[in-house]
Amino acid sequence: MFRLDHHRSVEFCDGWRRRDFLRVGSAGLLGLSELAGLKARGAVADSGVNVIWINLVGGPSQLDTFDPKPDAPSEIRGPFRPIRTNVAGVEISDIFPRLARRADRYAILRTLHHDGSAVHDVGHQLMQTGRSIRRGEQSPNLGCSLSRLDGAPPPVILPAPIGATGGNMSHGQDAGCLGAACDPFVLSADGAGFTPWREQADRAVHDLEQARDPRLDDPHFQAAYAAVSSSAARQALDLRAVADHDRARYGLNRFGESCLLARRLTGAGVRFVTVNMFETVFDEITWDIHGTAPFSPIDAYAGQVGPMFDRAFSALLDDLSAEGRLERTLLVAAGEFGRTPRINPAGGRDHWTNCWSILMAGGGVRGGQVIGASDAKGAEPAERPIEPAQIAASVCHALGVAPDAAAPTADGGSVRLVEEGVEPIHELFG
Image: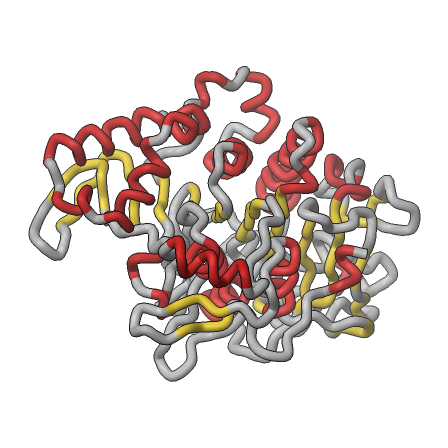
């Protein structure tokens, strides 16, 4: 993993220590002949679509966000009220007034579910890889698989990898069985808001060159190095070029700034950017509303978390549309599970894997639609149940990747991007 952190130091396996430039790995690009063969067989097509994947870490409540149940009893419907959107017949929670005015640009999928453990880490694995750990083997993050498959620049994670969420397992954000050569690189920093991202990258590259690190001679490493040292990437990272009012539209916080950077990086040639809305669910206001410390109260949705997402995602939709890039940028905003239909004694909601909602937009997705319907309590799918693997299949479909495409693994084998028999959600693109 290629990682840039601000004011931190770490010891590498060879004992080398350096501030700012941390954990360096290679990009894992295919050779030109291998890539040509994949394209000739139709496994890879040049769709021109990039991906911004937003992890709503903590697991948003479906009833308090995109699947309100105003006619349910108060202990089920919760404290928020539905508001009309600009799409007839579609309502969402009143914590999202901006998104309500833009519902014609995104699709709501209301029936995500899985039968795995109701643990954050398991949900993160399922959503970001399409499968869970099996026989101790970690499946690769979808962005890593795509990079390995078609030779695109390595994926990027902003503003930090997902940390402790209680399960002590992988979160599905690395290359897994593809090998560390295919890991993403992480741009992260301490503090919140307006981090000098370009200065960080410049310092890291300068230190690397001064150290004359032998990895600079590795052709795989060079791709990751080039991705952060290119003029296009540096310009994208330089937010001094962005007007203050435009930066403020995304929100004066790390999440808003990361969404802004994701938009700029995909415009500069990065194929797949993951934005983690939060790094942990402990002692921080997140979507994880158990109602008691170290977790969040339900009213945080209206006071902090909802407005934060509402502002940043709306700004992404607006700017990508204005740039003419929304059709070439697939947006996925997804939590790892939903919340219990009934409010608990602490006034919050607990983990629930039986039904929850996510958003998808751009990249050929037809906005203004709702796919799937939950029951009267938002507890179970009533129509069109959707599994996490189908989201991975839908991303591949948007990017022009064949359903049976397989990426080479570190041990000389291969791993399918999508499990056999899993179909994309075709009505998304109808």
